[in-house]
Image (cartoon, rainbow, N blue to C red; front, side, top):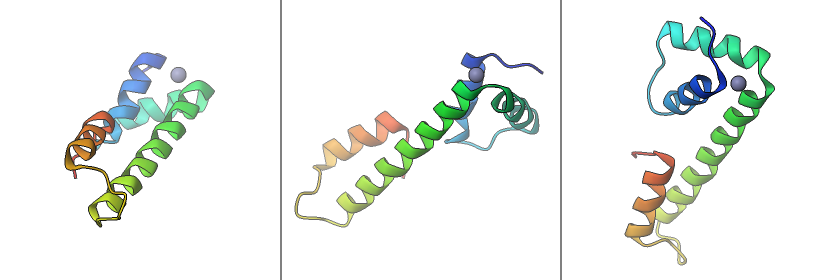
Length: 83
Ligand SMILES: [Zn+2]
């Protein structure tokens, strides 16, 4: 199983939303070993998700400058967080 970068980045995105199958995990792990571009992409995506989740959590706690519910939903949709 030899993924190209497009397939690998799709799997990286998918892995944020669902567990990957054994074959998907294996293929992705092999690709990440040989491809620094996709390693970087994965790191950036994980970082972005972490930051956005923190923003949303703070908004949910009702900080004074909190986002409007519509803005929160837009962010959730944009980064694919369903919580
Ligand atoms: Zn790649």
